[in-house]
Length: 427
Ligand SMILES: [Zn+2]
View 1 (cartoon, rainbow, N blue to C red):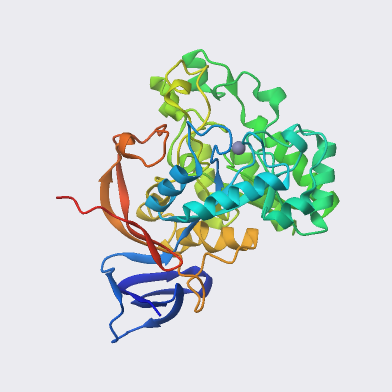
View 2: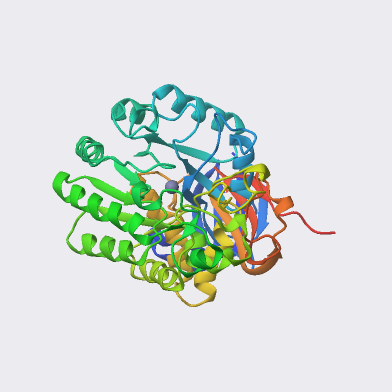
């Protein structure tokens, strides 16, 4: 039997309403007990001044494997994840081949097991080849290990396909995750439609591109009794609609990406292609609406939308550049800004990164309950570090925070009681 003890950290486990300074004892990879522990373990970790909480769950990650391994692969994404305190990630289906059949799900799960750093939970495709027309064999995908369904990268565009997907999924309780975008309104757009797009002379993507899709989908959720989740919600009116749907008792949920509550379209004023993403950075009013949604619970989850791109796809003009940023290593410090700025409590932020996504997806992780797998992150919430994009573990370096000071440093990440990441001690 191997034992490990984490000493004197601030232990936060939202699922069990725990927020207390104590020791955590781990036996054979599982959480065994908490409190003041006299016994000495085989391995001891000092967590003074640190938060000890469940390993983070990032429910929105683009792994790029299979098909675009020059941007990222399962190994590099896993290294990036654990450096960011993430021990479980859900991967989106827009790979090549895409996750529309069980074989690809098996392939990803096998590769994740070989790498062995981070748990990976695949999201299956809603439509065959992500073409938005025929729905996939969701039951087969689920049996193979898919935990939810989405066409992310693309919207589930046709209303008829969305209706069928919600109807079919509702019989099994599957969650349908939507990248809410009406292409007819956003076509050729590079950034948010508004004052910045006018100043830069670029075609914009209006909030209505997101709002129309969310409105339609909420109606279809009501019609079908399905479970609907808005990915990377960014528009004030969409958030209002989600809140209203929840008040009506519909099974509607949403996630926000850190860039949408930390940044606005003003980042684009210097033509920074690393601030180009989809949905785009929007106005201060939208940013504050995301913060409000996180505060009042309408937005239950924070997820990175980690979208690695090669330099070649970003070293070009704004209208040509690819959409997306890497996010696994900035997910925690940018989310902690919500605590430092007094918007949310530490426990609330931890819940949005652990127990809330676990509950939504039915995953048996995201808590420090006794007997549970010891997936744990230990971080100092007030320790600063400077982000040097060249040092990111991800193969891609497309981040808008290059050179910025990040507050919140991961010291250890544990997966099933094994240390899979440890902060380097600077000499
Ligand atoms: Zn998306």
